[in-house]
Image (cartoon, rainbow, N blue to C red; front, side):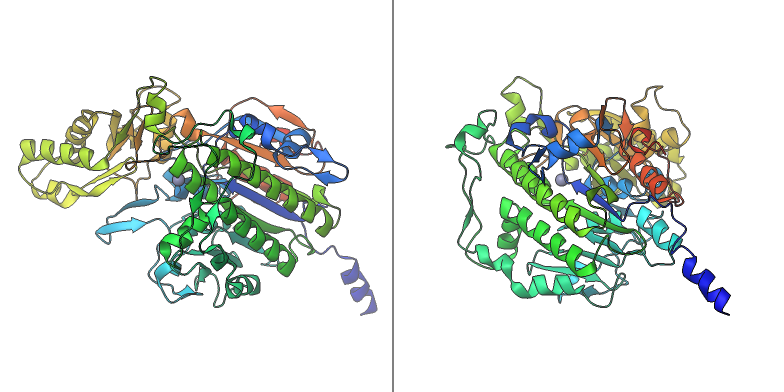
Length: 542
Ligand SMILES: [Zn+2]
């Protein structure tokens, strides 16, 4: 008996590699375009000053930075983008074909993480009717939880439900997102019956109400914005001021999130989670996934060349530095025991009116025009009817298969007619049919992979409609993303952990390569839908 106990005491606490990190920290900067790392570098902290670690420049100079990293699927939207980072998969396999799609079974539109079978925790509204169920594959967190008998903690934090959920995965302990009606963070019964204590405390503090009557103003001197230009709808100086509002309503709570103050809030919440959960201080590794949604909101509103975006990235840099220094002290063995990945879910197009100033052919698109053209063409050829289901969901256009079958038509032929009609709409580059994509009959170019990776046989549309370069689906002001053009696909991938050789890597890599890299480091199985290959330059030599 004594002998057995002695053996048990000697047994290692887990089967993971001895040099596995204590914490995986994946930060997705929403709408983080690759060029911002160099373009705004004069606004960032030095790599290291005294004993203090910097932000982007510290990561860049002491870790491995991939300068030619891309998303490799359509659409380049928040849902699909985040569904890739911790699964190593693509929409064709993982089921996340957009932020919205047409649900053929339910006969209605589906928002990516909607789930009516669960309840909101933390507010009395629908903001928490969300889950990871639409994600058909596992995440790094799921695989780690299975490898450690659920002893690893997996935590997801974002203002955006879809970002936190799709990165954290199915088995995560704590996944929280923002309720825009109340300014509180919520979760769903899919993940837990009650909010994490750190979220409850944050909600109780009502710190989010402290900005009433105030404005977001620049944190940098005017000389910092020499390379910035105002959004075309903005007049006046580059020293902006954006009022949050004076009443506690949805608009106010959204305005706070769309500011440097919002960025500080999400980092404050993250720091609370690290302390309360003791992340990185357990005998098995933990996972923390953080999405910075503020960067997306600010970029949509004022564009990639605006002083607002520059200011926000300077704030992001400062908060990354603070987070890294905190972890350096909190995690046994310091920052080298944290596997840090900084990347993004997609990029962003310039504001069309801004691009036009430089004589670039750039216009605003409206998905309704595509729907109208397709309905008209199908009506003319096959008879009147409501051929298109719902609207255009990013690139996905869904046709009424019951109507097609009822008229005795061949699906592929109707798809072709629809695709040809869609391609005649100004601003559309091309349109491909579901049959053409699934049977591999696309043009023989590497670009076609973006289309194939976006077409899911169960959830995808009948036609994929691709916008031409610098043609952007967006409202009267601001800009957007979603295409396979470089401004939307090109994102940073920066890694940092112990045993790495610091370097800049210029070979083309994909965001779906991140997950298998982390799994290799952790010594666990790849997520079920993985198609990526480990970023070998990032892995320790032994
Ligand atoms: Zn966005």
